[in-house]
Length: 107
Image 1 (cartoon, rainbow, N blue to C red):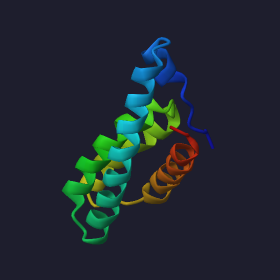
Image 2 (cartoon, rainbow, N blue to C red):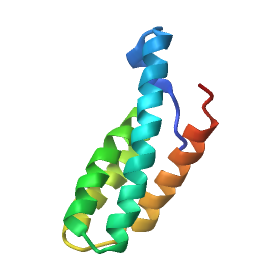
Image 3 (tube, rainbow, N blue to C red):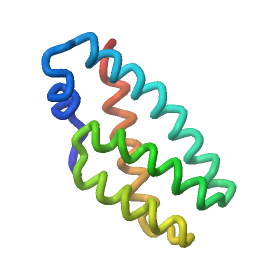
């Protein structure tokens, strides 16, 4: 399983630590909220809304250099609209990996 990194974020920041820290701070806050919303919507069977929140999370997956994770999220985003949850566990593994990684970042 691929692991999140700060490689892409560092490339975007181009040495600007203040920008990097602000981006990470914002991402951590938004991700936590979006993850909670994802699980709530999923539990309530709101597939269209789940697809929308997966779309938002997908961009954070990309920021953490998870190329395979991004592909899984893209497929899951489309599948969930058809009430196909085959990729749910893989997506949740990505969420867990991101959560662990972001929790380890000290700011």
